[in-house]
Image (cartoon, rainbow, N blue to C red):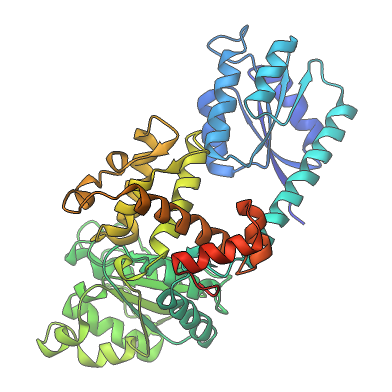
Amino acid sequence: MSKVKLLIVEDDEDIRTQMKWALGSDYEVRTAGDRAGALAACAADRPLITLLDLGLPPHPNEPDEGLAVLSALLAQDPLAKVIIVSGQGEKQNALRAVGAGAYDFLCKPVDMDELTLVLRRCVYLAELEQEYRVMQHAARADVFEDMLGASPRMQAVFDFVRKVAPTGAPALILGESGTGKEMVARAIHLRSAQQGGPFVAINCNAIPENLLESELFGYEKGAFTGAQAQRKGHIETAAGGTLFLDEIGELPPEVQVKLLRFLQEKTFQRVGGRQEIPSDARVITATNKDLRELTVSGKFREDLYFRLAVLVVKVPPLRERGDDILLMAKAFLGSYGAGHGKSNLTYAPDALRALTLHRWPGNVRELQNRVRRAVIMSEGKRVTTQDLELAAALSELPPQTLKEARESLEREMVQDALRRHRGKITSAALELGVSRPTLYELMEKLGIERDA
């Protein structure tokens, strides 16, 4: 069983060394001496627990820098457990730290028995929280391998992944840019026998055409000017796992030939080499173009198309996913809000209306970017159409009446409650603070079916 990751942030090198030595047998210990080091270690290792000294440079005799580090660590990972270990033992500093999100507060010199007990309790609590999140995730029918979607079209995509993942056959994912094709490919990988192997993703449109062959197949020393050493390609790196080729329609003709041969033989040669190298990498491809049309025009080999399109799925554009728009918008708002210390943000009614009316040419990627920007720009407790830069979506429509706005908000709240409680009227009514008969009346008035 792997050790729990523990980060020690302490400006005194002797104390850092002593604590690392004392805790190293039970924890995987990382250390840092200042804010930059602490944030870098947190981003790289995602420690479950951090022991943080409040007195850090450039002001080691004041608690302000340590409190700033605490805030930054929790912004990076809101679920992290931070224990303050400091000589700044005044009560007000303890209250400030705990109020800012610290798990506990210990004063120097630290009693190791007390610290050991606090750490064990902290690990136990963190593991319980993780189990609860896993259970919550499993209970949600609209969450699948980190993808959100309650609409019938996305549920069909999820069903496709479940069926094809175990087969090991090539798969072709179609869809507009920003719809989440790579996430579908990754879900196939995670549900396959290759899940323990690497997932290597390549955007064929992002690599210069003259370098694409060597990137995919690797090259031998001296194969061309600048090839000073042998280098493995992505097909070799993906052995035992999955190779995902996005924008496959951009593949040059000569590389198409080599890829076809690899799919047929499961062997390849590096550029400038003659040795046949085996690779059992599963190939999943994606494109936002019409590959059939490209085969007709001669820009894409028909025999390669049929090799790649053994299993085909189309990821729908966001504008065709109905209530998934608000489902994802609220999920992104919660995630980005927590990351920026604005966990209580909600959408204003006009923002909800704009979200559903916008056509989303950039699909899910556009939605993510708009919500992230709105979280940063918002000044109150509600995200507005101006924060989302979606005022144009409402400009050509007549304004809502008070009755329409009220019904829109009621419909949203009732649908959200029913979705969370999977159609259970009693539980949804309890959350909404109304009786069962009242909820039934609301559903009938708003045209909401229980299965919805």
